[in-house]
Length: 159
Image (cartoon, rainbow, N blue to C red; front, side, top):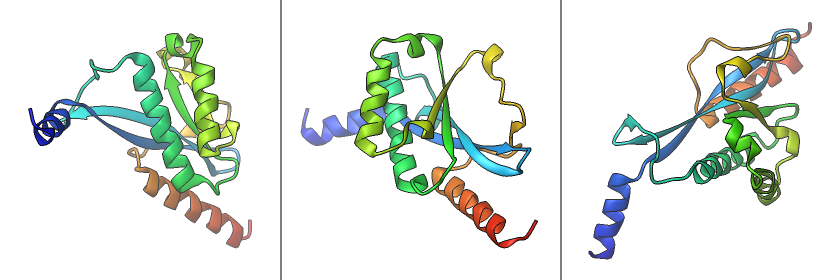
């Protein structure tokens, strides 16, 4: 196969990662405090589970994209975090902390900016006073625009 054919084959048969973000609102203070990352792998517009990637590779790809999104769009946000829900197996992986430390250092992201939770339905509880907005997931750029507009409004509107 030629180089072009290999690239075409890779693009046609390799799932692509897309991450949307669902805003998280602190009801006590009526402010946006973070976002839940919703990673999806798709192939030709259909959501798939990437069989070609191990769970560790998939998690690393998702974390890398979240780190890139945060450092590109949300680096100036204070008291804002992105939450990623993971399986217990991923959280217990002995190499997981090293991978996270490496990504945070590489992108210059403070540790509290990315948080993790368990993906099982019994552990999807939010902190008291926090809730997810009933809105569709947003792209990282739209989330950043919303965060900054809310932050600016809070600074200019007397309470």
